[in-house]
Image (tube, rainbow, N blue to C red):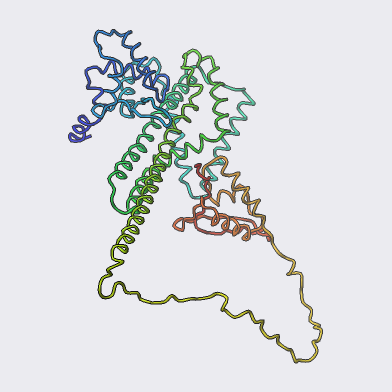
Length: 478
């Protein structure tokens, strides 16, 4: 936040321009009422203009004499950038949506109001819980991980014993209100995050359209540049976090669970006393609509690239037909008066013919004749039990164990799977786990990290195998 950065933001950032505008009170209050308060993603131009007319009538039309449509177009212009004006597919009506910069500015104005209740306990507990997850999630030593789980188990058993002895001690009203307000604020903040992710993909889509319109080079160079930028966004921390969130939200079980939890929380008396916005009940549906907007932007980017390839293929075919037509016209022009000398030189005046049926037919090899004496039956005693002492590993059972482990988390290591599903057939079962990882495109094998797997042999001795880190991952949704 040095002097130069702030100077640039003051000149170029739409949010700063909104805060410095003379009619910021009217613009911010209306956009908050139309988009942020009802969690509205987008709105058609006639509906938004009608709401703006009603709003201007309420606040006094004398100070704002222009038509509502002119105000909306001005707010969506490149000079302001407070709204995004676009035409949805299969629609001839313009729609408007908030830009991420405008939403941040309005949220900052909302934060200036004095809040009647400021909760700190839940946020402190959230900090501790996040720190605990960071430490446990980055721990690679199985012994330390088991020790932490044992401590957690001891605390849970102590809580169970206390409840059996003294009964349940519920949260008081302050704690319930604190946690509900934090949940509601986080839920509404996710919609703002979706707008920012979607804006990043829209910027990429605009860049691609501009390049396609003016590109004269090779297709491979353009595609490499476009896919490189797409990978930068998709593989960034923000992109990976968005994919993980989207995979989690697309689970029908998670959606049903979230709906049940919201219903139960909204029935609590302390929560009813807060008079919460009833739209919080369908906030996960708003998340789905917002996430679908980001996914639709990515689909439009793919469609733009496909149209570009189709257009280039058509242009190349048209160029080939033009060249052939020019050759024909030139040949007809010199048919009666061919040029002197060699008209064209060919490397080989005649084609080489290679007939497949000229190959000789198959000749079976001569059967060897054995001229030795009669074979004698052997009298040697041979242990044949080893021919039947084979170990068969059930690959389906091991794959099912991996899928069960991935139901509660996005990824799991081979060591963790072996801890929850101990190896029953030793090294053969371990090699089968490695084979499953090698065949799974979503699995990761990192030679830079090491992992240890333990199992008990038939002789009762615990054995350990040290191998590269193997991580099974849940497949990403398309």
